[in-house]
Amino acid sequence: MSSPSSSLHSSASIYNRYALHFYDLVVLVFSNTFAWRCPTKSVLLPFFVQHLQGVHTHLDIGVGSGYYPAHSTTHFIKNGTKLTLMDMNLSTLHVSLARIRAAGLKGKVELIAHDVFIPAPEGIRNAPFEAVSLFYLLHCLPGKISDKTSRICTQLIPLMQPDGTLYGATILGKGVQHNWIGRLLMRLWNSKGVFDNYEDDLEGLAAALKEHFEEVKVVVEGKVALFVAKRPLKHSVSL
Image (cartoon, rainbow, N blue to C red; front, side, top):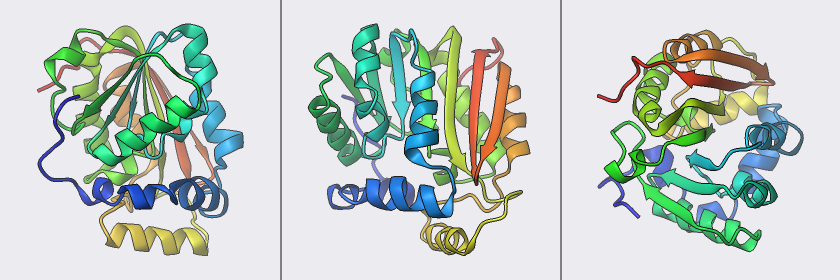
């Protein structure tokens, strides 16, 4: 496993082992249902699983509690998928790995402690991925949605196969009408630096993805943008 960044951004450092015990209840149950109006079990998990079909190499970035891969182990086992988890936070990586193991995935799972804004370690570039997932990562990263999406694409495309798929979900701050719970959580998490998404909109996300991929589809479910980008463009390389 590679070494983590020397310092964690607020969005990553909040997830210590204690906080991760409450992650599913606070984020995946309460917030997704009542604030973001994008239920985990009926929308986000099926969306995660949908793009695992036939995938043999998968990279999940910003792993949280490991909920999505842990609830997809039958698909990984069926495909003989090599799963790689990437996050800046060692706690999230180890908690996620333990959860995935408990769910029945016994094959090799690689852990990469890494900042997605900088080039990945050389070793990971030698085994390009068929699918890369970014669930609830973009809205936690600093910067304009178009800029941070483009920066991530630039770093990830060298890790992807020519026909690879990048997909994920992010909470929008602009162009959607948040209810009072959503507005409260937006103020809370943005003030603490956990979110940076007041200006994140659908158009900026879609435009950035289209600069780097041949086929892009972005839809809104509640206050969440679900995106799929396929076939990286050749001009997109890491800096």
